[in-house]
Image (cartoon, rainbow, N blue to C red; front, side, top):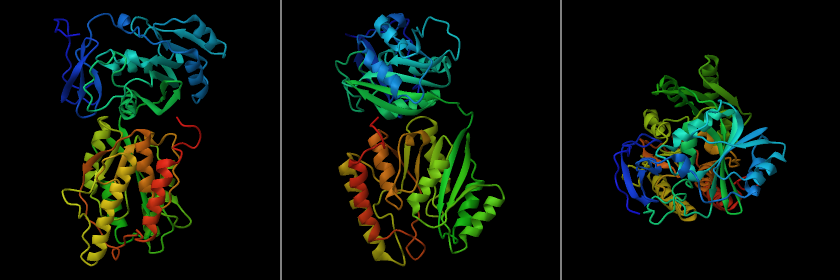
Length: 463
């Protein structure tokens, strides 16, 4: 169907998700133009259809009773009531839900005046969100309807054509547009105030499940600092970190001290005594990965950033690393050390070691990309910055530098494709304190690739 501009049409000039201004039209879908934001990959109809949205929300799919009941069984807390947003008023479905001891009713998000906090659970079909100019506005209404820690679900047909950044979307139906990209879904839900995003698959259907959480006025960044024998640089790095001011973002600093023997432990204690940091004291060194895992368990921020105790990385890069997260352009950022040359390590006192490590970087990056179907330039960078909710449902196990492999592989498998942001980097040699083993760690990396690429993503059932 050819689209014709009407006087009543309202065009958006900015993305409803990230406020980006680079909008690219894809094609006409069900009679209306769909466009994609180049910054965050969000897809939406532009302009918004002018006719009654209540009529347009009547999707063609009937959600089987078993799908809704399975969703109610799997979510973390059984709700006392549920609001279903659907034009398909199925009496049998309603009776099946009520037989589980749950009060249920169909609700109309457009026309009904419903008191805030009325429901412990709301379930919606994704087709509705695909038909509006600003899906976030609809989700904000649902957010208001939910009680504290209320459960929210979006049901999709998992057999729909999956959204692809290069797709022309020709001949797509109105309910097959865009919401199967996990990272985009998570960004949308996070902006509204939902967290703990998981997916539930059942008989050709996919449900995105989330929980309503409180929204901070200012975002909080959890900086995780694993430390072991870094006396030469720790105090200077920590002073810079404490003094660092971020726009609209507060920070908590979590130092994991692994029983250093060179005097670092005493410096950590001095900072802790001033009340400037939180410290997790380990009885012995078990590896960087173990320390970071320990820190992740204590982090409460919206965002997480991993910071080494040395000065290889420039703390002035924090703003540009956090900015894509704060704008909801992505959920996962990597600080890429490659700024045009693959020779990122230059050890003046150990030239041969530098050559070997540079070749190793290229080889192992290619290996990870091959097995994971990715195109990353620097997956092993220390600067991994992500929305803390990305770790929900995951259990990390790596103790050494194989943790870099584990977190990237598991995030990729969960649907988070990182945005790589160029950063400043000044490498230090082994004589200056680098702790990577050129024999032991490559073996662990190969094992990590096999273990985390082909092993179970979740500890229990797949979500």
